[in-house]
Length: 158
Image (tube, rainbow, N blue to C red; front, side, top):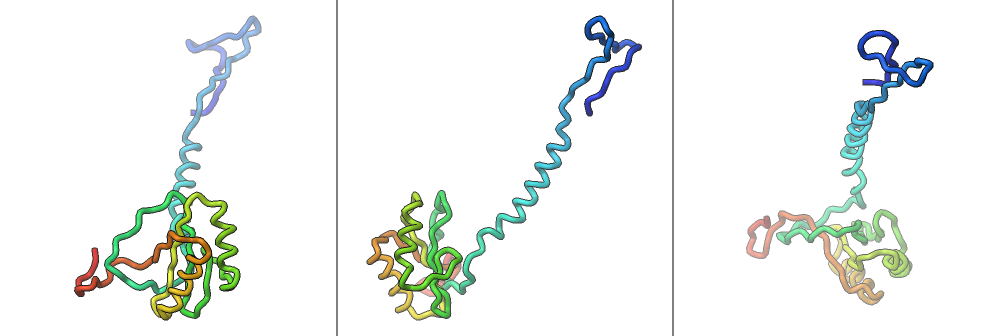
């Protein structure tokens, strides 16, 4: 209910001071607040999956388990099928990869680097990127794949 003014007369009459001005009835109306919160909740539920879209890759599938999630967004290096290297979603030149990673890693709590490589690129190119990362001082490197692929014995993973 909204705030209202009690009128003179009747059993619910209240007086303030000697003048007899009507008292203001103050109640908090939470309905608009709840409406706004529900709208914001829906907006964030729709927008959140769109924020995790990265560089489009055809990741190889393996039987490996998923890595535990990080408290902050993981630092990702992606290698696309055409050989383009990206940090997060921004393409970088191979010569500047390590310098940019060092600058970004200096501001972060975690020193893990997730390497995402398209399944169609040669293994040699993935190893060269990983070698450059290791030579640049990054030793915690995680290879990202899709789950549900075949294991060595031909069985599919969980």
